[in-house]
Amino acid sequence: MAKPTIIVIGAGVAGLACALQLAECGLAVEVVERAHVLGEGSCSWMAGGMLAPWCERATTEAAVAEWGAPSIDWWAERFPETVRLGSLVVAQPRDLPDLTRFAQRTGRFDWLDADRIAELEPDLSGRFRRALFFPDEAHLEPRRALAALASRLQRRGIAIRFGVELAPQEARADIVIDCRGLAARDALPDLRGVRGEMVVVRSPDVSLQRPVRMLHPRIPLYIVPRGNALFMIGATMIESERRGPVSVRSAVELLNAAYAVHPAFGEAEIVELGADLRPAFPDNLPDVRRSGHVLHANGLFRHGFLLAPALARRTADAVLSMHQPETNRADLPQRQHA
Image (cartoon, rainbow, N blue to C red; front, side, top):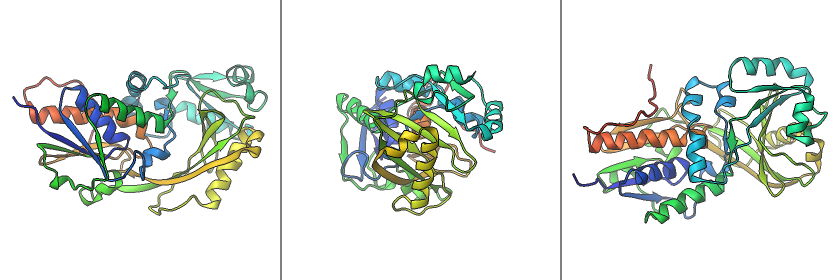
């Protein structure tokens, strides 16, 4: 049977992961992207890059941890710069009950006292009494990870055609993978945008090896080390589809919370402020939906890098089912509908 022609529309983390997964299955793939350079206008460019399925389990559906856990190995195999040093969750003394509730909703962690916190992160010595350590989690630098996926595609002879605006129904291919994110609302009316905002700072006086989350009554903060004294601080999650720059209130709240983690952040240099809209379905879980020869792979919400590999595997499974119905498919994660 001849291999189908496949076009992937969109070169964010969803599109690149889907294209690479399909290519690794031996299928011929073409990738088109309306932006003129990698990452331009993509919410993937603003992501935190935390591969933290058990931290996320505390505030999300169990499926997020189930689908996200295998992504750590997926990324480590394809992006060797993936850092596997775990995640740390802390709280101010007044918020320690929140830390206990967080622990009750998840697993795969160790309770740490002040001495163990200082062993893992010396810069946090004396600042927190208790913490949760998730040793199996990881993180990555999203922009370098996207470039690595694009490079892997290029080595397989798959180039990304930038500056191409293409509607899925107009694409000339046997199968079209629609990874346009929020732009796909013309085909997915229940898709919505959730605004997220972040700050990148340079702070030579702070040394953190792994993501640190601080529980907070209003803004659950995370700080992700990016190397070279850079730290990404996020993230607001606002049910708003307003585009535009970061608000003053959000920037102040994020920076104040970072200062509470370590006062040296008060002297940090602000390198970048960013905001974008993340595509989400009503239940905040990703999905692959078929419409004729088009597969819509979307709805990563705030779990872009964590759940993109699972979305890619499900997309590849659907393509193989369309192309070779008799194929024995891999046991890939399936979304449960009510």
